[in-house]
Length: 116
Image (cartoon, rainbow, N blue to C red; front, side, top):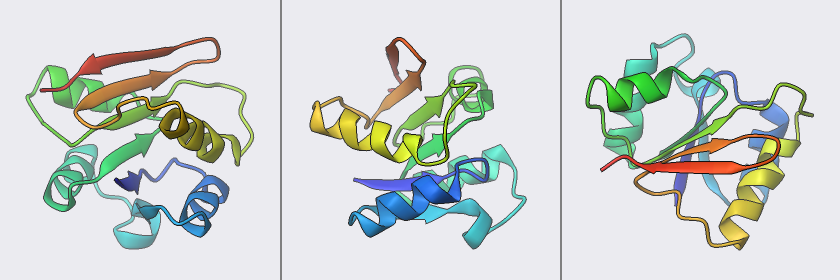
């Protein structure tokens, strides 16, 4: 499973995932300041699940028909920079399916909706 961290995804979490052996790229290091549509197209072309704090990906998927391999949207207002990495690792350890899913991580629950 490969990941693409959006610009707003904390570098600390990115480094933890990378150092833990996950195949992950960060937009700020690869192509800073590109649009969400361009991020989505990159995720599609490289078969990467988008990790983001930006809810606009839901609009791209469910209104405009984009079909990335998956999105994990962190809807967490008060979070430390390392927590997203541990949340991803826990989701994978708990066998949550992230591929073909729009996953919303909130403080008290995980919601998922199939993308395709």
